[in-house]
Image 1: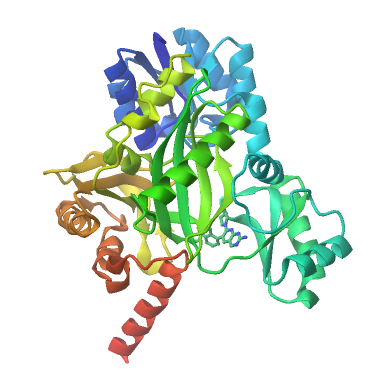
Image 2: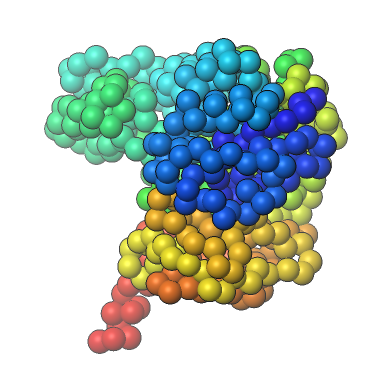
Length: 459
Ligand code: MV4
C-alpha cells in the first residue's frame, strides 16, 4: 500500500480523499492555490503545499507545480479527484514517468475511452447495447446524409472529443443535416481542437442512468449498481439517486455485468462510470465512459456500504478489490442534492462570497460532504459546488422525506451568497418528481411551469 498520497484537487473531493487516506493509514498531502490557503483540507491533511495563484491554469491544472509538490513531499501516488487533471492521459503519463502512481486507469486506456467514437466501437465489440449510428467518424456532409437516412430521424451529431453534453446537435429533418454537420464540426474544432464527429439516432426524453464500476489489476471488476441522474439542468446534475426505480434486479445484473465486461475488455483499472441512456421500454444505450470518480459516487456508497475512494486507492496500489460481486448487496435508497452557491432566481449565476452562517444538518442516515465552514470564502475562481447532502432510507419515499428534513436544517448565508437549497425543496415537493416519472427534460419543464405560476401570481 502507498505511504503517502498527494491530492491534486480542492474543495469537497480533496477532503473526501484525505479522509479515505486517513482511514487507510496513508499520509496525505494537500495542494492549494492562494485562494484555498484557509481550506479545510489544508488543515486536515498531514502536509500541504502551495502550488500557485487562484487561476486553476496556474495551480490545479499546472502539471509542473503539482508534480513538483509530489517530489518535494516524497508522495508515492497522486489522486486527481474529479475535474482538473483527472481525465488527462498526458498528466497520467507524466506521473508514471516521474515515478508516481496515478490513481486512475493507465494513460493509453484513458486515451481510448476519452475518444467517444473509439469508446463506442470498443463497447459495441464488448457486447454493450448501442443506439443505431456510426462507430467511425463521418468524413463528409454527403456521408452524414446517407448515414442519417439509414438510421432514421431524428439523429444527433456529436463531437468525437466531446462529452458531458458539449458539442452536440440534434437534427430533425434531412434538409437540416448538411448545415448541422458543418456547424458541429467547426464548433468541435474550436472547442476541442478536433473536428471529428459521429452520428447516432436521437432518443427523446431518456433517463440518464450510469453504472459505477471498479476494476483491479488482477482482472476482477465489480459493479456497484446504477445511479439515476436525470435531474439535471444544462448538463449540470442537480439531484442523483441510487438505485434507479426503473430497473428490476435482473436488469441491474445484466447491465452491470455488461459494463464490467466492457471495462475489462479495454484493460480498464480503477473506478469508472459507464453512462447510458434508458428509454421508456427499459432499453439501455451506451453513451460514454467516465474514467474518474464522480461527484455523485456517495449514493452508490450508501446503498452498498462500500467506500469507493478506498477501493480506488487499493486497486491503484495493485491490491485486489476488497469485495467480490457476490458480496455487494443493494440496500434501500440514497439521494444526493448538490448544494451550489448559485442563484436559481437569476438563471443559476454563481454567487461567490464569504459564508457568515454555515450549519450543516445531522441526524440519522444524513451525510454532508463539504469543505465549508463559517467564514469560508466561496471563490469565484472555481465551480460553485459548496456541499453535497446525501441521505439514505429504506425506500425512495422515505429518502425524499428525509432529504426535505435535512435541507430544512441546512443554514448557509453570507453577503450576496445564494444557494440551490430552496430550489431543491421545490423539486422534492413536486408530484412528478415524487412519482419517479423523471426524464432528462424534467428540470426544463419544471422551470417553465414555475415561471408561468410566478407570472400568473404577479398578473
Ligand atoms: C444523447 C441524447 C439523445 N440521444 N444521445 C448529453 C450528455 C452526453 N453524455 C449525452 N447526452 C445526450 N446524448 C442520443 N443519441 C440525449 C442526451 C442528453 C442528455 C443525456 C443525459 C443527461 C441529460 C441530457 C440532456 C440533454 C441531452
